[in-house]
Length: 216
Length: 397
Image 1 (cartoon, rainbow over the protein chains, first blue to last red):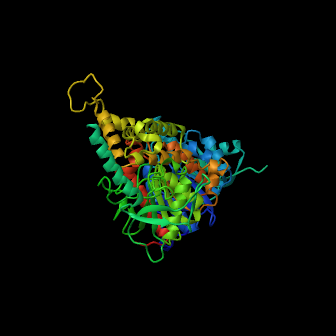
Image 2: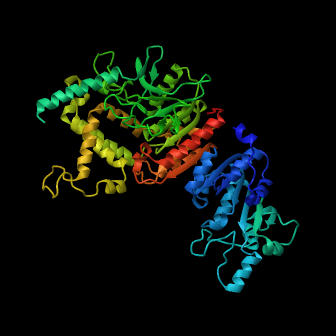
Image 3: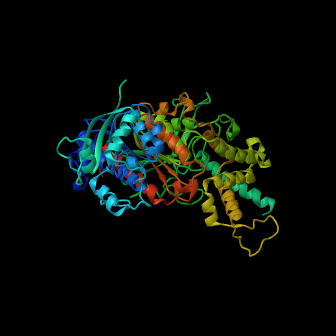
């Protein structure tokens, strides 16, 4: 059911999360959508107001769940590694995994689950192949710490980093198709032109992919 | 205590409770032959009655009604003083002005369950055919029967549907039953620290309790009220056993540890050296003063029989097919009577049924009882859920 009070004051996406708006552009009107790792529900709330989606969220942190429920969202405390298995096949038009794949125990299984329960999946990943990360690693020989990825190796939740090219390879391995893909710069804006993978892999801070299970 | 004194006390307290069973201090709705209650056991109850309390005011649209469901030994006094114990209502931390279930906004109804002993028809009520207490002649009651009785009350009050049904433990079972059987009449549902079926472990503990009651010579094959006695010892043991399951190992350790009660050294006897023993004995004996032993048998049995999936071909999601109710499910980390696992079963079924469901596992070291206690995290989530649901329902502040 739509809430007229939220409609009248459509929340604007904070400048620091331009990536949300970019993801939002990929969401069809009225979609049945699951946001895995929905945080405090910013994206879901925005999509409910802007795209009238029928949204659900999964979030690991108590704080995130509380915030989401207080916003009137349907948020389940749980994690991508264990809880996706309980959802029925193709129950959602779209499943979103934003900046979370690198924090899962078994990214490949998670990706396959996303494509089982959703007809499409939008996956965004921090690109470990970005030139700044490569430079840090090359110059200092230490695990890179950046503004976007501020943790040290020993306390990071991000246990499975990959580069855009690594990810593209994984998508091929699990028999999925990339329907759409683009890279975002440090401010979350789309890199404005079509470029070969190597270019995105070097200059994209994040990769955003729309995936579909390959039809046989 | 000498035997005569015990008998006198028994008679006085039994008398007092007996009066509450037929003529409760709260409101009561009495249904005659025109509204019989058909029970799962295949028997029709008529006449019957249901005792309830209300808090707050029903709005003109009748869209702000909330039903609060109590646990095994609870009653209709959710947010008002219990007439037998003189203690505050069992959910005053959650129901009241400015509380998560805000009585300044909502019209809250709390009933005594069918099979209870506080004014709704139960084994301590007078059987109109005999003029004596029903005792074990009362048919066995189920959770669905309890909910059927509540639905009859809601009809009687002229309320078309409920904004919210909420409750913990057995109250949560009623919430699930409401959402399943009367889904179109429930806008939002908050089943807390509960399960869609009673576990073998819980059945086991309650069976210990029932056997303790029935082994007490004063039980008199369930006819103790006719003899002016009651199975005090048996019921106290039942309460003690069950009470252990409501606490966590860590809370027992923190609250009591191995500390001794009113003594510095071990007594080398069985007088209750330890604080935990004294605490449990107190829980047991004070319970006996306010609760009917046969009611304990009936209501605990209703919990044992509850299996919502079994009622739907073994598939729990089918119990909620097509539901439009929004759910907020909560569990507590140290609850071993109704562990998080049980709540997840509910959540997964709801998700599979496409329901709008939220779920949170609350960090608490207080075990199952946490749902009754001051748990700010639970209250915050419940408030958020209710506020958002109220907005969606167009219930402005």
